[in-house]
Image 1 (spheres, rainbow, N blue to C red):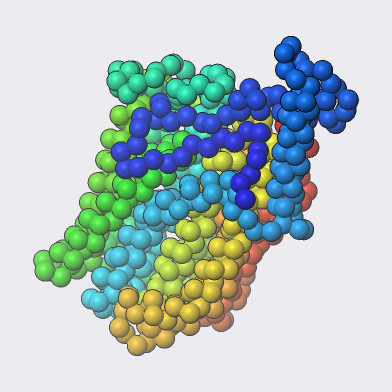
Image 2: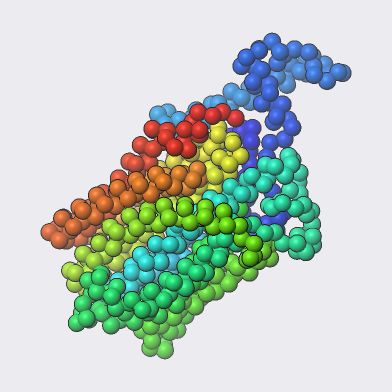
Length: 555
């Protein structure tokens, strides 16, 4: 059933060679929609006037009545559609908004999966070298992800929201119904004109400049501090895992700059609601990674070093593709980056860095607790964790779809449509979580066979099936709420609520983990995700912060 919103506006992801960003338009209300809005207002306050004399001479009164009646029927259908998504009585439905969400989320799954899928490929290849190497690479991957994501995730999410807002505001004030309206402040109707004058968007340029600096700092920190990081995570110098883990991490660090830059570019494309271009760039990179893994690890005998080199090469390729496509349409760097934009990035980014620390803390503790139990438990834990993280990206894709759509509607003041986006993304997230739980419960045992043939490691990995399964619906809702926070720039609550959940879960891990082994670790991570989901429901129910205007305002 299609939604009949007065303001249907969606940017649709294009094919691998999409038209210029400057020709991608946001569908906005036409004059007829404005008339419908006026008629609806008149119906509420002055019923007789909406069916009165025609506003334009020569139009039959019957036609006016028919038009008014159609408008009222349209309004009733719209109210019914929105009401169907209400908290207590909502039914799952794929209307226009639902299809828009899936249209953005489905291509985004692989684009989001860059690092986790690469980690899965490395884990699968290295797992056939030996359990010690598998455990060592698992520790190194976890350390790299935890350190790099401290800045990467905030930058990615802030970029997506700010670019989506900028695009929405530009579209709102560039004219109504113009087929050649485009992103930015100029007017261009042809590909040739667009190529002659690329657009400058401060949100994109600021993000890429920050990404370059952050990536270089991460690379230096990981190379110089690899030994210290191994000590912190609980891998002593005399451990058989120490040498391969430190070797993998040092080489993997050279991939930090392209990872951060690629994520910033992905954030820009997401802001334009284009998730296909990042998809193809990531697929190309992962294919190269798999091919090079097969060549470097075994035929050339490079072992874990070969896995790291393959990963780094694939990351530079993906970053190059994204920058190349973005550079065709936008000016990627300018010395005229507005200072206020940088300050806004830093303020919002600081809040999300605090949030990221809160996410990193329980994950770091769980990895450390698992590593202290020895190579076999650590290897089994790593398999379960990588499956959990990778599958969770399906939920993260829904979150980014909700973020982009909500940011657009919120920036334009379409609050009723914003509420409909909110309802639909939560409904789809819940159904997706249940479907993933059922699928993993039935197939997790077979999935673990892809990573190792060591019976002891398989036993440990398969013992985590309940954790991986039960947390999927919880993960789905928690991830979706993150996207909704970012869509209305509710960065403060996102940070503080996650910080609370992280502190509670970390305390639980410190107390329970050492006494209950991996079972305590899984329980701590489940508690962490559960608290995040509860915090999301609380925020929407209390209608505080930016949500007050979303719930109180009407279009």
